[in-house]
Image (cartoon, rainbow, N blue to C red):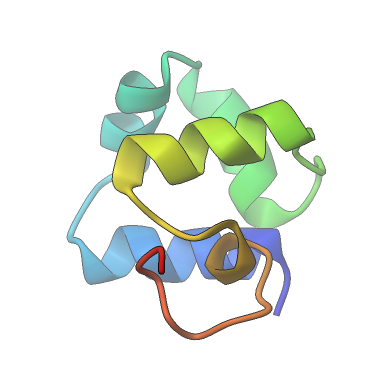
Length: 71
């Protein structure tokens, strides 16, 4: 599983739209869609921003863990 797959799963599990996530992260919806589709690989800074905004582990976002919560 890659970042886009993990991010999409997280978003759907929380019942969020792409627009809601984009608004929370202060990015355009199209930019968010590129991350979720895997067309763009996120920077470390962006990955940390997502993890902080939603209290997620970076391992979960990277597809290295099935546990979304930070330990």
